[in-house]
Amino acid sequence: MPPEMDARVAVERLWPGREAKVAALSGGITNHNFRVDVDGTSFVLRMGGADTHLLGIDRQVEREANARAAEVGVGPAVERFVEPEGWLVTRFINGSPIAVEDMRAPETIRRVAAALRKFHGAKPIHGRFDAHAVVEEYRREAMQRGVEIPDAYARAHERSEAIRVARGAQPLVPCHNDLLNANFLDDGEIRIVDWEYAGMGDRFFDLANLSVNHEFGVDEDRELLAAYFGEATDDALSGLRQMKFMSDFREAMWGVLQSGISTLDFDFNGYAAKHFERMFTWG
Image (cartoon, rainbow, N blue to C red; front, side, top):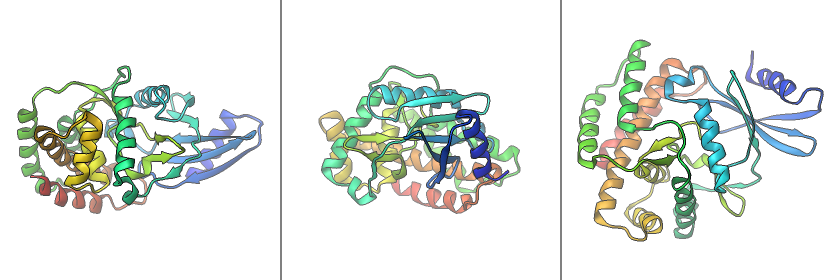
């Protein structure tokens, strides 16, 4: 059944007998997202893609993280969660996208850093995100599905282990872990959407993921760290650079695994290759 028809069926279950306008939202490459307008109120209906649990996605954790983000004024309010399908309904945020180049402006960096600090300081959530473990799990799942693992994996994994040892145990805080540009909106406040990879993790992964996805240079990284911590120390810059590597390694292996499980029309192999190539620029 086409996604639009699936959405219509879901909307009839969620709002039986009520007139609803349904429109697909662009931007997602894992799930299908729809705007639903009912009785003058707008919602977002999120329907998971195929086998997303293999990507480490737990829909219960997503719901909890999204609700926690809403509690601290960062995420959209959660309205409904439907099991076993894992459909998530949130309020639609009538905000503006933030262009990548605008995300690099000092004032925007400070606003985003403040939003991340709010979520990182929120009450703990269930779920764990460890980038070093994630890349290994993606490799195992991909191999089980006959996906060829790129030669670059061995060298990248060696670097990952070196980073893990060098950084040691880090404080665990609620993290988003997927800070793509499409996941930010500005409605007067910085809002963050798409919490499906959230879990307790290393705040430096979030900061690095933000930096990589918005093409921050050293000046922007210093601005980010200063806004988040109050100062940008050499140790913090080193940690950020290490986790930039892990951010790209995770994205590369995500693409490798998705090439074997996703039914969406997207060049996952090209996506993986781009991140494998870039990751080694971080050291």
